[in-house]
Image (cartoon, rainbow, N blue to C red; front, side):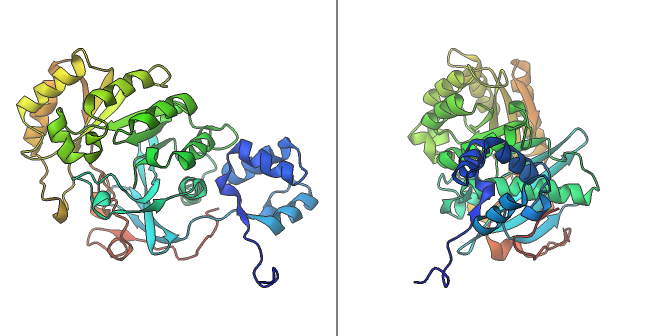
Length: 380
């Protein structure tokens, strides 16, 4: 078909870390410092049009306009919780959608980002896993969630200062099963010419993909959170099917290796509290034995209240039971916190990101809804 009828696709520059953008600029006959300027305009200032980049030569801006673009994910809806949590639903094509959640706190602003449309791991307590797996996101789709959130929040709060101080890869999907797209996105988050986040403030959460934990340690060691949820292999096999491939002993060994290069001196273990399943005093003591014994690892335990959904057949542990479980861990010397539930009135709490467009665009009784319908629009 004639190129004039079907022109070549424009390159989305959100998909390049700084080295990748430098290589792209080199193909255009430009030096690396031009890539640095361009990178700052995109990520620090939120520019989406090349004409905004006033310190770039007009010849370069014209060249870029003919070959490249800076394109956000289309926003299907925005939900704002009564506690200030914000959830965006992004269209990633072919009927798929992913969600990102901003959690404001007095001392930080945390963005939870998705890495896949759906998830193949299929943890029993996670509504996203029950939706099945559609596809991996590419790097531009991962970083576009941060790009849009950061610059739209700056506009909302009338500030030029950074709003998002922490990023957690805890949205839809298993990040380490999308490794090749994940690492360039992490590097953009860390780059001083980009978002300038410290390694301590970027967290990758995994259900336990052992070989990829080792690769992340060597390639881009950020903070690591591991979805544990059980003190024994038979129970974890039921809750986290990946455990059948990488059992607990192998997972803990990988965690110990990761600590050699980790930005923090501990691994966070996430433990979803399920009524009558993993929340007994006996299981708390078994968890102590596991993490404090010979196979133990320096860690922090994050107990997570389960957010029920019908397909799971599970119930949330009573608050008294969670407190009793936590007390056993604390008395044994394990640093333990109970996660505060945020955004559950907009299905933005842990385990609730299902990404089903027809379900997630319906207003809830306690929800403030502010849909954004301009596709690919700049947040600035």
